[in-house]
Image (cartoon, rainbow, N blue to C red; front, side):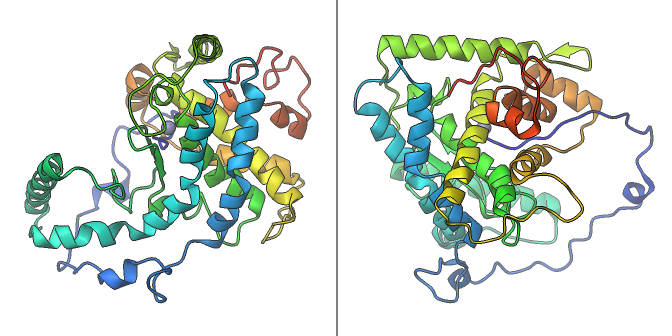
Length: 367
Ligand SMILES: [Zn+2]
């Protein structure tokens, strides 16, 4: 899983005026949109089409590029011959397909929803009860019928992204394919730095401490040779140590608990950056690589700024403290700092001297 934000600030003792006066207003119940409008363009010319930047990124973050990142980081630690390629093909080939499914999700579920009579009214409580009844029946039925390969673990309006090890698939609900993650008029470096990093993050989950225990077919199986596994563990321990030494609000991060997400953050940034570079080198850029007006940053610097902006957020101190103790994700501040400290290309882009805070001598990239 990808999303969650960070950074603490003092919270007021009273809610702000606009929240004190806020009252829910549901209005009349609305009908769901016609199913035909949700079908992908391939089946329905009037339906939505895959956003242009996503189509372009599916080239940039390609199987070949991801393979290069993996093989570059796996010297002397390659898994059993053939297995790596199988997993890699299986995961990365779903990048473009996953986006199509994102727009198609309701065509799978809406007919079933209607058949099982999901009752929608103006009562929030009744809607919650109705939804839970429907979900219980729906999920119970799946125990008998099995899960459709095209089924989703969340709805299309969720701003998040997912990797499912048992399906070996990455999922991008429609809601994350919009600003600030993705904009059709955004420069490519910005799209690659934001949603491109998310795509890389989800791919890398297939090779983190948990995902790496599942084979290409989603089965729980060991496809690693012992030396590869030992080397992976050693590198992951470096990341555990690095993140375990970050502190926020006087608390140390839990490097063990967050290692899977940290591995994905580090790999995702690297894959997106090289994907962007490959994309530009191949002359495939469909929009401008111009610098932003009034700013002197280079495209590479803006790639990292876009990446960091994804994590710009706010937290109540109590929630942040709870997240540090129990969350699988590092606070946003360290989802920015950690991967950038480990990535030579960041230091190069911002001319950070070797040995400075953002360019430490000891780097811990797992992939
Ligand atoms: Zn994740």
